[in-house]
Length: 249
Image 1 (cartoon, rainbow, N blue to C red):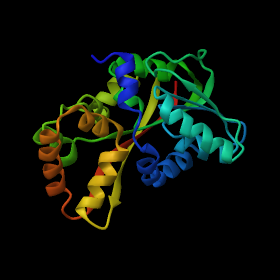
Image 2: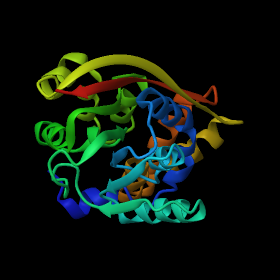
Image 3: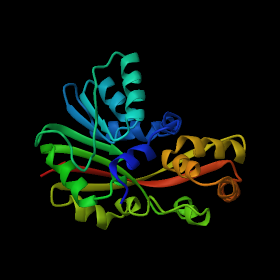
Image 4: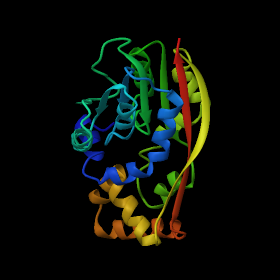
């Protein structure tokens, strides 16, 4: 397993705010589904550049965000400052949240906590910090052609375990003892003017992909680029995801 520094580095350095911008409809959906009220104490786990945190603050919530990447947190803090929101952003690991038991009314993680190595520990922490009758929202990618493409490109399957969260039986096994759960699905879509433009977008704004490309030689980069360009020939990338909603028992 990668050490903490390596994991943090793999999620830093990319222009993640660009891809986070394409998640806006999902962020909106999550905040709407939670029916956040003014004064709600909300924790955004693996918050990245703060897409959910900012929306929750606009709805009047008292928001805290946590992420393992100092780089992404700096961007989140700048965005909050621009909107004059007093959001507390902490650097930390979702497998060991630095918060008291039952400290939040609502706990959210959009394509974040699913990437932690220890699923049981992560689920236990999400449950621990959520108060009784509080709410949970979590999104996870499903196994799809994009995720399977990485092997063909010569890239290690960094997200194979993460996609387990997209299986209802796995999510129920992790969270069902602590939450009453509901499941729904959705589709994320991003498009560009050309395959090359779309490749530039994903290769620079998806942190683990960018980190892997930087770790291999030019020949491996060229081979991978051609595999991805062939896949992105239409200039469109779509992925299906699962939305997990829970009420704390």
